[in-house]
Structures are given as structure tokens and as C-alpha cells.
Image (cartoon, rainbow, N blue to C red; front, side, top):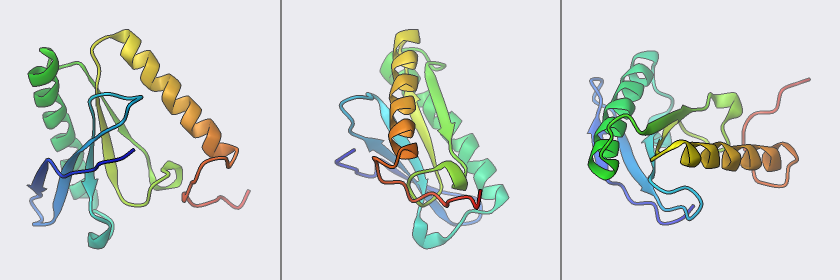
Length: 129
């Protein structure tokens, strides 16, 4: 992933902020992150709920605007133990059809396999098992 630029700053009811960031990725098109800044610490349960609601709302808007179908999107959230990057975030991927969804899942499977085999950086906490 490269070239991250904030598309929009969003203020949560708590006054803390999150950012909608378009991600330039040659393998996954129409990809965005809704990210809570690491500098703010971890979001509260209420902020997480609000961010997921905002993520769905923005995904619907973006999919309608870019694809002509406000329901052509996928939202992904990884809990602390399963995410690669530190910091709380929601992935928004606009899909046009089932083939793009299949491609997304294939890319995610490959990425997670390389992380599990420790061939790709992964800063998720390790379990004691």
C-alpha cells in the first residue's frame, strides 16, 4: 500500500477524530480505511460502534457515487489480536460484482497466509499457546 492521503476528517460524538483514507493499491481497487489515530489511544466501545456506523454510511455513499449501487461494498474489521497494523481501523472495499469479492477474499487469504508463515510483517500480539 502506498500514497495515503486523508480524504475526510470525521469528528465523533466524543470529540475525538477518525479519518477516511483512500488507499492506493494495484491489487484491490476502490479501497478505503476509516482509521482512529494511534495517538488518541484505543477508542471506547461507543466510539467503535459509531465508527462502524460511519463506515457503513460512507461505504454506501461511496459505492453509490462510484459504482451506481449503494450496496456494492464490504466492510472488514479485525480485532486487536488479528490485525497486522497497530491502531483501530475499518476496511471499506467497494465491489462491483461477485468476481471482485472473490478476488478480495483471495488476496486476503494470501496476505494472511504469508503473515501466519511469518513471511510478511505482522505486529499482532502472539498468544501464549
